[in-house]
Image 1 (cartoon, chains in turn yellow, brown):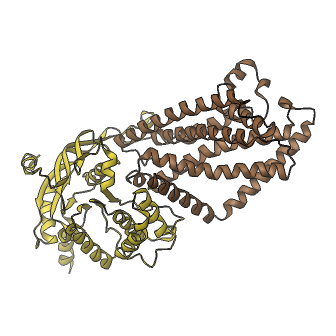
Image 2 (cartoon, rainbow over the protein chains, first blue to last red):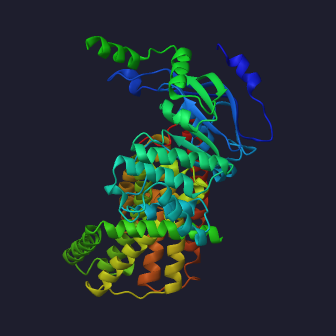
Image 3 (tube, rainbow over the protein chains, first blue to last red):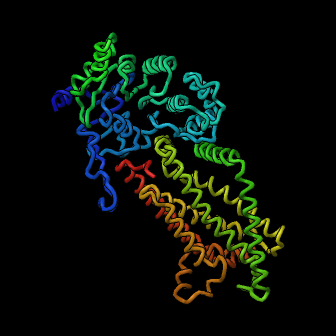
Length: 283
Length: 266
């Protein structure tokens, strides 16, 4: 509300824009069973995105920040065509996600936050081969590409392990590998480093920057300010489906600066500061 | 075309690897086949040689009826299970973001499900003939024709169950209804002429009735494709109409799920 008018003007649509959201609205309706005669279930509706307009250019890393339920994952799902907008339009590479979903999906790779979205009795390599076939990666290139992404995600040693034996972090790495094997023009990442160790996370951030240099558009949803500072060219700040901010991120902008920006705009209380203050007082 | 074959190969390989890594699955299936056939064999002996539905011995009559019925229901079940499992593991949403169109993906997946159940059907019929001495007089062309049209109908039923699973998360209930209703009405265990007239008319509206009758005539009586032209035409008609309806329903239910955000609900 505060800045949306300005943001609309900020959205510059050039031929470089690869992902374009135009006045997108998405609402989820809750329908309680038997009108709540027997149990208690939430009714009404949740506004996931409210008149959201933004764009992401080629070779740009756009980070989506916002509290839980702010609409970050919904935005990614709309781009990947697993959701359709109620109003407005989502375009990827000039194709409308509603009318040309197939053309959109050919350009998009997504790594979802949900673990276990794999076939448990196939190995990591077999899972990647399966999804690569469905993504129409030519069979003669597949083995080579799979080896590359297994290397990039540090899964070479576990390549032939059945994924049902994987830890959370390994699942997450495999999800990233699956998104990368397609070599998409648009890469969607939903909390990609949530379960990763520090070394893998650092390596992953370098991979993201390298992909952007190779002209990939990356949209990354995260709660991690260090991650945002490390990879973002620009950030969107969402709250309850509304776009609060859409601004570039400087090369030397720190995680701390992004944190204070986030809490200032969202109006949320930064309890980590309170906790640190309490700890110091106690000493 | 190359891409489609490549995808089919990937799906068949996935399902085969998953099946062989469920190590006990094959043994359980084989024991199940043998036990079921033994039960039907002794049932037919208990009924006695005087009962010859349509002029056929009762055990071969049961063998074909239950074999085709199981093929139908298990194919639809396999298809439904694949969708349910994909919803539960979260793979469905990811599969729907690949470059493969949802309808193509489901049809290719169903071919894989049918391939497994076709092997089961062949094992079932072979065991019935080799171990329990069912007498057959097969016309292979007719058998193949009946099987192809029956698969089109089973595919439509599988897609319909998957559609209801995506739309209302209740595909299993439909299959239960389908299973129990078809068992009674399709002439699996007894000829439909034994039913009261209204139920017999209802049975004649069930596609599985024609699939079972057609396979009995092709496999047990050796009737030619020409002699079975009427039955084959009915099966082809059912297959075409049901497939069109099922694919339209699937397309609508996927669109609705994408609008409501319920694609991965189960």
